[in-house]
Every structure is written in C-alpha cells, then in structure tokens.
Image (tube, rainbow, N blue to C red; front, side, top):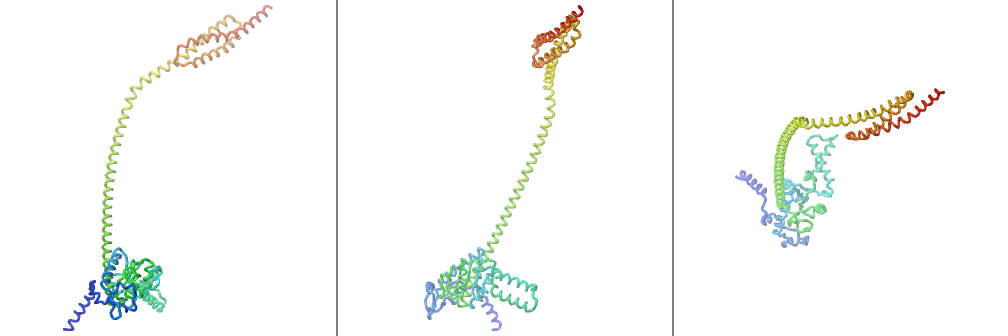
Length: 426
C-alpha cells in the first residue's frame, strides 16, 4: 500500500507546487513573507510598512504587501503587454534558483549571477560579449570550431561556460529592458544605480533594512527566505506571462487589421482600375465616333466645295477679265496713233516746200519723232487707265511739241538753200 500510494502523493504535491497560490494574507503568511530583519538593523524609511516587533525582529504588514504586489503586477503586465521586456535580477544564493526557474517558465530575461558593472550603461560592450557567446555555441553545435590543439578547444569550452554563467539569461536581449524586477536592493546596488541613471522603472522586494525610496514599486517582504522569494517571483512571472499573451493577441489583431486594410485597399484599387478602364473605353468609343463624324463632314464639305465655287466665281472672273484689257489696250494704241498722224503731215509738208532740204530732213525726222513719241508715251502712262476722256488733251499738247521741234530744223535748211542760190548766181 505504501509503495503504491507514495507516487500519487508525490504527484499531488508537485501539482500543488505548480499551481500558483492565491494572492492573499494566508498564502503570504504561510510563505513567511512577514518576517523582517532584527530591529537594530532596520531602516526608518520602512516604518510605514512595519506592523510591529516580535522577538526583537520587525514584522512586515502583509496587507500593504498584498496591495503593493497587485500594483506591481499590473504595472509589469502593462509594460510587457505593450511590447516591453522585464529583466529579473537576483544574484543572492536564496534567489538564484527561483529567478532562473520562473524566468524560464515566463520566457523572460534574467541575471542570477554577479551583476557586471556597466551591464546596461555600457550595453554595447556587453552585447559584443553576448555575440561572442552565441558564435561559440553555434560553432560547437555545428562542430566547426577552429582549434589547433586539444588545449585550445578546452579553453574555448571554458570560455563558453563562463560566458553562459553571466550572460546565459540575456542571450536574446537586443535592447535595454523597460522594467527591472530586483530581489534585495541592498545587494544589487549597482543594478539600481544603473537603472536610475537610465530612467528604467524598478520593481523590487524591499526588506526592513532597505530604502523603499530607491525604487518605483516597492513590495515589502522577506528577501532572505526561499519560499517568500519564490512566491513573489511566481506572481511576477505570472504577470509577465499575461503581458506576453496580451502582446501576442494585440500583435495578431494588428496583423489581422493590417491584412484587412490591405485587402480593402486592394479591392478599392481594383475597383478604381476597373472604373478607369471603363472610362478609357468610353473615351475611346467617343473619340472614334467623333473622328467618324469629322471624316463624314470633311467628305461632305469636299463634295460641296466645287459646286459652290463654280457658280459665283465664273461671272466675276469674266467681268474682270473683260474690263481690264479694254481699258489698257484701247488707250495706249489710240494715243500713239494720234501722235503719229500729227507728226507725219508736218514732216511731209516740210519736204514738199523745201526739196533741197531733203538731205537734212532725215536727221530732223529722227530727232523729232522720238521726242514726240516719248512725250506722248509719258503722258499716257502718267494718267490712269480707267479715264478715257483726257485723250483730246494729249492731241493738243502734241502739236506744239512737233512745231517747236520742226522750227529750228527748218532754219539751217533755208540758210543752206540761200547759200546755194547765191553760188549759182555767181
């Protein structure tokens, strides 16, 4: 009976340990969270969290512990739910195991060994060492480690072990955490100082010998008991898990919303493209119709142009062609003929009167005729072609010109004739 019942009892105890105790006074009292340090080692700033004394030791007020722990859990859940990270720090012997176990269950980062100076303020250097650790672990896992001798390979293995000791809990940390959970702020003074310098909020278990004003969210409790640290750490890990679940849900909702928005945009884009295609098709059809109409109109205009041009253009062209040649052709020959007729009788009369002057007459004719012709032509050109009445004036003007030209020509001829008569008489 005992042998068959012992496994069942062990399994029941394991289930009880795995289930989280409710956050109430009884569970905290059972875990020993109310025990404080001896009264001679107390910090007066913790007076508001102290319930009383017993056996020269202070007793912590658990009611204030419950309220402070609830507030801290809400704050951590909010920060982690928004995508932040919580770094759990506990390097003292009583806290190392609890911090590592609960951080691994919650998927949080942790440091359970010595806090190296500059872990956050000189994060670039720490990140270089983390990268070195990851590189060596991959090399050992893939069996691609470069070592000349067995001693070198052992040295590299020792380096991996040492780096894992200090950076094993923060191998995946790519940026500074948004909140710190610290056990015993008196021991982790360097971590508190770096977090305050960087403005990172701190949630810490504060015992009666600590200064609660150093942290943002103080949880009054026993930081020297393994059960007390484990209980409070489990509640903090629960809030981290709840925050990660909320962040995952929010991420999925955001991705779904983005996918839906992309689908709506794609549908709207497709509808716009379809409308644009319809408009383009309508515009093309309208353009074809307009082009066809223009072509038909152009053909009709070309067919109507010859008929319209021939009817009104023929009489106008005939009248213009008939009128202009008459005015130009009639006037010039009439004037020239009149001038010639006037000049001819005068020269013939002069030759009949003076037959002896026939030798010099051609010269006079040659000189007189061109002058008369030039004057008559100049006068005919000066006056407009449309006026036909001034023709008689040209005749009158031509007579004296011919007489003047003939008069001087006669005197030398007469003188020569008289000279010849005198010689003959002698």
